[in-house]
Amino acid sequence: MQELSSIWLNGKIVDWKDATTHVLTHALHYGTSVFEGIRCYKTLQGSAVFRLGDHIQRLFDSARIIKMCIPYSHDELYQATLQTIRENQVDECYIRPLVFRGYGEMGVDPTSCEVISAIAVWRWGAYMGEKGLKHGIRAKISSYTRNSMNASSPRAKTSANYLNSALAKTEAKELGYDEAILLDMQGFVSEGSGENIFIVKNGVLYTPHPYSILLGITRDTVIRLALDLEFDVRETHCTRDDLYLADEAFFTGTAAEITPIVEIDGRPIGDGKPGPVTRQLQEIFFRVIRGEEETYIDWLDYVEKR
Ligand code: PMP
Image (cartoon, rainbow, N blue to C red; front, side, top):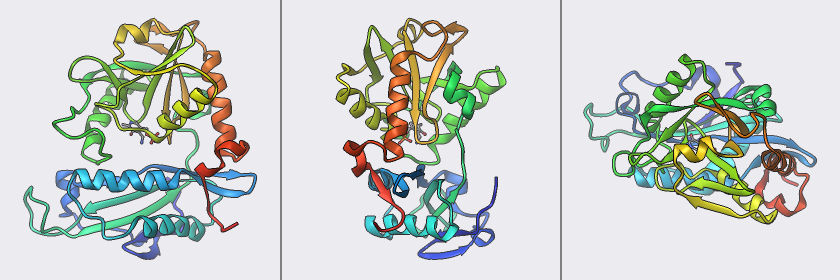
């Protein structure tokens, strides 16, 4: 990882190398942390963070689900994010706010442990490579079941939930695939290890119900863009057969953006190339995040005041 200069830690900007924590940090042992993944893009009017307010809100929602009180307001974290980008003098970056239970009494009960807040940024290109964005990636249905809604709250973006993702991702990569697709407890499609999933069949977009998934902000963006383009979009139960028989499939996520899926479990999706609907949505999405679509300009939060 390429280091930048500064990290925001508990209200102060500190040197990158000084943003460290004790080995008895509660979150390291018991997964008690919430985080976000956000991107800042170069736009026509200067650098802008995509849907920053919505990401900060999801951070607060995640914290509420795990009963952790964030010692800052929404606006303070919003401003701190912009400040961190400015301090590091980057025009494009990935942003990682993290709030976690720190040092205190050891044991599962986190309530005595301090709550630590941090915001780091770094340069991060296409999550699954430029080639993946352009030509699509190969995915595998995981042997791991997605976190279930009454076990670990998939709607909360907690670090604990990402052990499930890491197991699935590692398995997929070891078997020669780029990404995993996890099924939920009932066997319906849920999401990728770090992305939501859509399929296209006969011109209609389908995406899994919001029960056993993280409610992705890119997912929400794509639904809105597709509806505005007058596509029929349905949140539904999807089976693995629906994936195999889809005309097109793609992942959505802040890191993955819109990544076409061209093969699942050794079966080509459609003709094995990114399809026209995926291309159309990719095209508008990249225009939106670069401030080239006036209709969606409110989704951009500019780093410098305009
Ligand atoms: N699902 C999971 C498990 C994820 O980690 C992510 C990435 N945050 C997503 C979906 C997509 O969410 P978003 O579009 O908000 O990045």
